[in-house]
Length: 477
Ligand code: ADP
Ligand code: MG
Image (cartoon, rainbow, N blue to C red; front, side, top):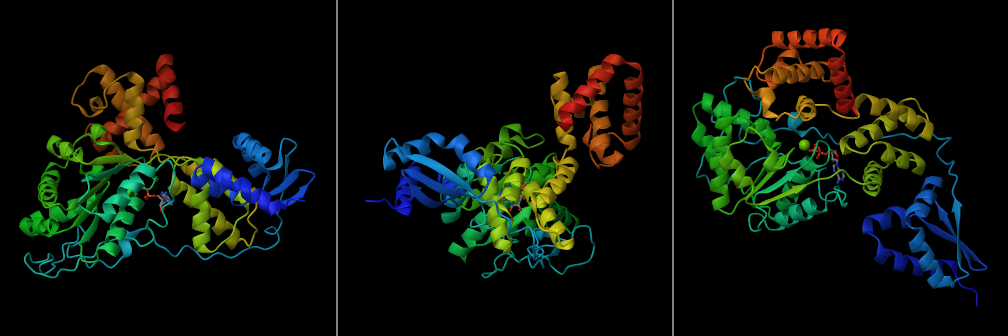
């Protein structure tokens, strides 16, 4: 009896599914189509050359085993690679991304706090009056940042499931506070919103609030100015789920930290949920009140890692699907392969390619993608920050990071500080004043002087020039 190729492949898939992660299965096996079975040779169709190579490289043993099981030791596997030209003639149209991710600036804010910091317009009692039974708070949550849109991968599994557990049972799990940390562009803000949205849908009566730590700080400053700090504190103390994004910006803001500390304690004692995001784990946070830091360690700190290739592909595919656009498989793979460390950049590159194709009525081809990505990767492959520069410089000279900000005039430290200033000027868009402020609280003239000194030394001192060249490499690598 002749075996049916679909049935054979179906059986293979069952085995494969049990042996690899769900995400890998979806990425690499669901797109495969069985097309023929002849003389114990099973032919499967794969979407691209790259796809075929990836299977051969990573799943060959598994494939061999399953084929042998199904077809006996004479069983063979053949690939048929689709050369897909269906995209090449038709330029496709895109809807420009309508979802506005930048939620802080253009959403109507009905939250009872003045978010237009700096403006001195009088708001008649901007705060909710404590004691009122029914309050309405704009949670400031972005609907697009849902769990549904948050692709799961090894890189985020712990944080995601902890977040999910918290959303199901806010304030009642051991994950309180839940602290999510990672480098930029890896999904902290997204995950924080997802938790908030999930709580709102499960417990509509609960008051959820998302604020950035800048908003929090500015509101606090305003409340001091308007002499209604109590109202500020009371408002925050009645929140059920308080999400503070990028807590590192509270660094060195002692008063704001203190008031947050009180709010934190009150909420925690009343089994309310606290969610915090940060660019560092608590042990590495600097400029933070130690009592506050010790509170952060009460709950769970979960990090988000750089996503692996499968997850990056899945993220791109989900975005495309949501926007209702198609893109050739090889372009998707190329994108996922080229941009590895920052999901925001991955999305940025994706949008540029779509825009470019749409504006110039050009088909999305690998060639176009390569051109765009080259530009993208060169220009913005990494957001180099002053903090990062300081870290590299200090590591390089074996100095503690605090040295840069200390008052000391020791030669080696002065030099490290000058180098940090020099590279900050060269590699970031920050102003001289900002750079000075971050490097030991100096003024812009000091920064200018540092840049000149470094330039002079590079000309005259060979050893110094070596330092600068090596540092440059390390920072921009
Ligand atoms: P962070 O706050 O860590 O800098 P964001 O939460 O702003 O990062 O994420 C940057 C972009 O990447 C957002 O558009 C977000 O939707 C997207 N993103 C991050 N992680 C995921 C994920 N796991 N699945 C889908 N999109 C993601
Ligand atoms: Mg963020």
